[in-house]
Length: 166
Image (tube, rainbow, N blue to C red; front, side, top):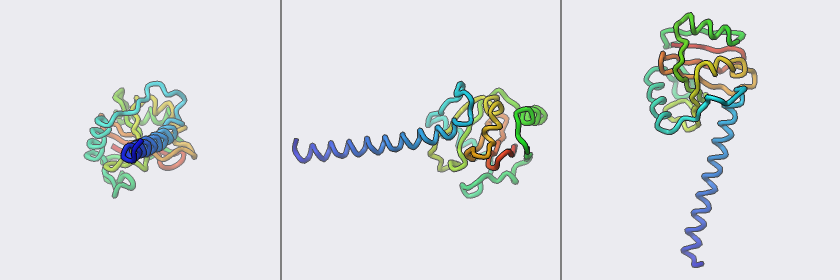
């Protein structure tokens, strides 16, 4: 093998190694996001195009403070639920006519748009509510659920407490 072929082969091997490291990192982040769910059924990792569309819609409808956190104070409505459980959340969403069969999108707090690079998950709202206690647990990762229709966001940043804004 000549020197030029070795360089090409080495470059390919380095590229494959970087791809493997990136895939391992994405898998670890995906595992964090999926951990609170009792079953993974009906949870999908969204593709690049759908994520780009949802990020655009999210940015247009939810105020963000310097890509660090959401500015829920600027939303028209905001409600905090303490001692989170699925009955409280379902009752509240139904009362405010926010409960929907439309899909919602779960993403980590560290991945606020527009610079987000981590995975986003798509699932029915019922799946989030079914696992709400685990999503709001002490050791759960801080994350958000975005619903594009009707437009609202659920913020999971403190244990046993969620904020719903619309």
